[in-house]
Length: 323
Image (cartoon, rainbow, N blue to C red; front, side, top):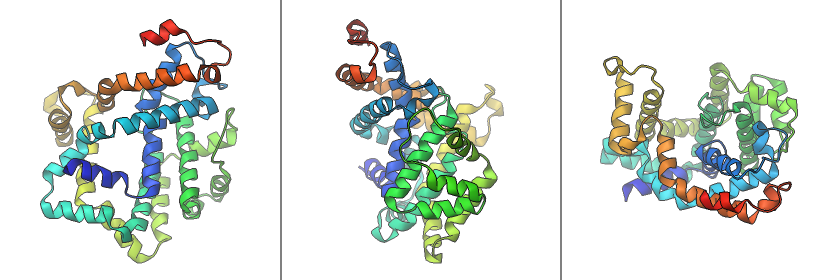
């Protein structure tokens, strides 16, 4: 089916891109928010100096990582059929535009350019105010957690230097700090790493880093990156994501005052995501698959209770059975 074929191509754009998409979905998305709630429900305190630093507790990180990966694997098909931006894009692409987009997504000779594009996209996201799940808070710690994952995946794919140089074009001290950023980190967190996470704020820095990344690659790669980023599929999906975001965050309930983008967001939500979505798409996904996520969470908590909750003794079985 076209939806699944396209989603798989997007998800496998590059090893770096795939790794970062998985990390963001698990660590700063609704999955982590729900898994934290499951642990709280069972009276198990997070083994960390503060709740804000929870992602840097080894036991908690392992719990979220393990259950999150299981949940994503079980629910990959659901993401295909509830991806409003993807469905909107496919509906509006001609056959020629679709084939052009798929060629850019899958051609093996273009993987390096897709990697650079995925790095640029991640940089944009790291600077974004939208990073993280709205209800979870602690955004600076979430940003630091994703910076650690970013550095880890750059190291694994051999692209650390190009990003560090782009950062260094703005601030040499932050370039040195980025090189020194460990790919594993445990609480309590050193203030210097908090300061580095706080450095990743501001459109001007984001744009300069993104531009510097292109200055470090051959001209033909720059052309390929631009072609990929501006493909008909990516353009339509970006249009839909922005429209949905604006619709979700609009302050006014007066439909007569809605902008064209907000009305487009309303149409996409109604057509591709169903009336139960309301204001928050992620909550809709959670509503439909909460049972499975809870089942996986309870199973992990039961099997690893002593590791997760070393001061509480045996699991509180009545609470576990009711969850």
